[in-house]
Image 1 (cartoon, rainbow, N blue to C red):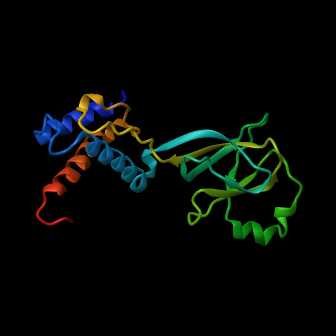
Image 2 (tube, rainbow, N blue to C red):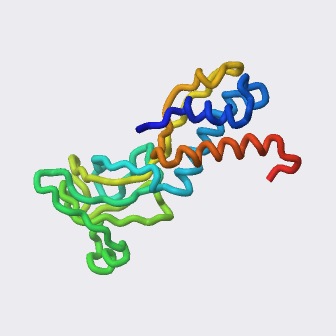
Image 3 (cartoon, rainbow, N blue to C red):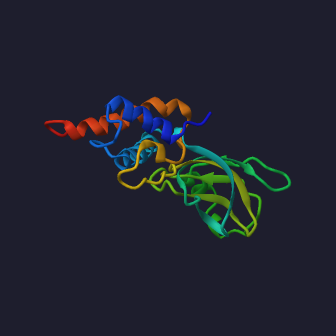
Length: 188
């Protein structure tokens, strides 16, 4: 079951005892909501994973889809044979197959290499030909919900939590924390 952003913001407003959203405008609460989702995605990328078919660009260096933040795994080719794709260390491939990046392209990929220092790209072996596609799992950045205009109530909030439901209470606590920081004598 998906948690609506409206129900989450309503619970925050009730906890704050600010039913008319004077002290904490709803647009501010929605900004905190969006910030909280990004924080969860940053610290727990496993909370925002998606499996999809990725079309590869010709060659060896590949980019993840625009919404992706890091690669988790590549499981297999999506062609007729659906051959498994395994992860290898690029240094081993470089040592064993000098010049592998210049080999003839193919639509069936055997291996992928991933460096966490470049989280939005990976390499594949052999070089991909046009039409090569693989099944990949990657972490993504949750979608923001739109901020309502100032002066509107919590009932105007549209959208859903773009995280698993188990993060609902954590999101509520995150928003409340940000609200209470506003009243803190010393900001953290």
